[in-house]
Image 1 (cartoon, rainbow, N blue to C red):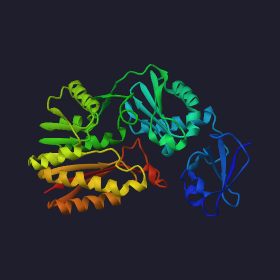
Image 2: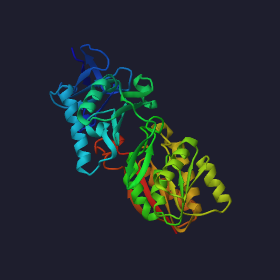
Image 3: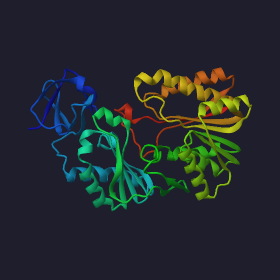
Image 4: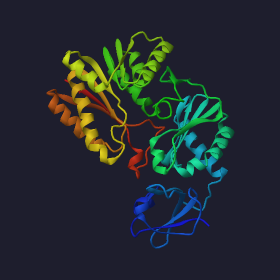
Length: 387
């Protein structure tokens, strides 16, 4: 018999508004008994039905609601949800490479599916979804006939679900690298060992938008496989791509060769130290791009992250030529837009430069956000002109 989870008094408001997470400390009692990872029914304190989702007693997020009616999580249900998610992307013109399913935003919490040409990469971040990945794989093969489906469930967040980090083939034979097209550029995606699911699709439109600011000499920090570098190379005289990872820089070199870009060079090093060394050397750039990994993955890390963001942004402001641009990003939802702007204002004041805000953007439309769930709105992209 399915679990029946009853919330404490007044704890249903956030969930009724559309948020899917039910925290363990919000629960008054649990009735009935079923296996961990099964579909549980959630009710308000006074017995009103709220929804259904997979339960995990090992997680602080006890239930992730994704059904609000009497539907069941069968093949037809998953087929409809996945098709609806994919059709939304196709309606926006996405074809070659995009996020097909974005977890909560597509009504499938903890499930990520990315499309890279003929290959799909899947990430399962909860116990309930992990238990059903074979069924989901079957649906994906039936709907899209991919050459391969590769699992990249090697995210540390799985440990909070009591799950191990895993990756490997779910279907077919995936290559080490697959080629995609982005903004008219060819990119090799390392789906097996690249960060996250292999590539940061959420910055696609932002990378194209960055081109207008990338004349002259450009420094791309935390460049990863070179998405910003390649877009910058279409208009810049010279691009220096900097990252601490040699594997990332190999990808940059390979992508530059693939596109015939001779104006891209790589620099291996810790970005914090590299920026300081450029400042000491009084070396300046027309544009500096900062797209670091998340400096804070929990609320407890925000203070340290704030200092880290301020450090790199302050130093970057000092090495941008007068009239040039700083393109700066944060991909942590804990670093809110308000907090990020506060940090930038402080950095600007301490830099001794006049800094004006030129453009603000967020994640690509294939990564939609729910207004009721701050966690789905995470990416900040700011363009500043340094006067």
